[in-house]
Image (cartoon, one colour):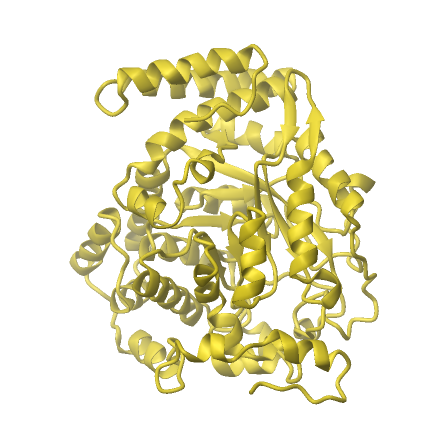
Length: 508
């Protein structure tokens, strides 16, 4: 049994959260699937590869094959700048082959920042007396969703919660329903949230079923660091998060509960980035092997300043902080190693970094981002370190981002069709690995882009968007009937005209 000392505040609740039997059955002789020594051996045994060897591995990526750990360890050892340039270019090609010429956007919605954990890098940690603790009511959550959907124009949110009795599975389930209920009249149609993903604590199978029943989108849990000793140092004993395997196997429990879209991630800067990239690949391969379905997305945030974080005061930890050059390598390696997965770059990063790295493999990003609790409704435009989990690097509005992408010929997608058509789990994995899903996504990107331009865009942004949307429609027309059937093209154009006339949420 994993038991917390009864003298620790909240120990009774904590001891009821963790159910060892729900992860122990997956262990191999008591060990999890992350073997620290083996990973370091694979990295250290690899020598700088020849260009021929690198190109052999890149061919696997382009064929949408998950790389082996040995393949990834080989790519990590590349030093030649010209070879890295080839890898950047191949990562961009792989992304385009699977996801086409589009970027999906979303908004984070922070619902509560109380937490029983005491992670050294997080502003929410329980010992941080400077943090202003808040939990939104359902009415306040709806107000946040109405701003996000009705004033900004997002169709997706990721709701974020601290691990605390006040934001348990029942509260989260109710908040998901509340977010879906929000509808706001817009210029020509309506604003609404069509996909609610969550970033929350690891739950038991029973609690995960509650989230599945109310229509959770993707369930996102980051391991933070895969290195066991570092994990132990950063997550104090007597907290839920101190239990490494309880967290590591949460996606297994999600699949058991019926949730078929899960997301993994790592907070880069806690340990050596080479090890963490390998850990993410091992995690993806474990899910593929066990369930036939890998992660729907992978995230790779870098650690940023947080309120009262001891980590920033210790030189021993700062040595693992990731440079901009290495960050670009991380994104590239992940795109090549797990080619089918979506990849999320967030507003933690500075604008110039996002603009550079986005085009070597990223598929999703946030904009008009507010991470203070209740911050959308407040509309203050200011960041308050004592009210949020970390500090943002890029505060562009959604419209600014859309205009910037349009200038580069990229369409912004608000599509959520696949989830509602049943293209999730193993079905979407099959479509992604065969390169077919992007065709549906291209059509739905056109339709949802049309919605946003008509409902939210300024005249200047609308002009930029019209150029992009005409180009995308022309590509579809040119590829009919090579890729798209005439019937599908005609249906898309019918929906397009109906959206121009004010109808909403028409999808293929």
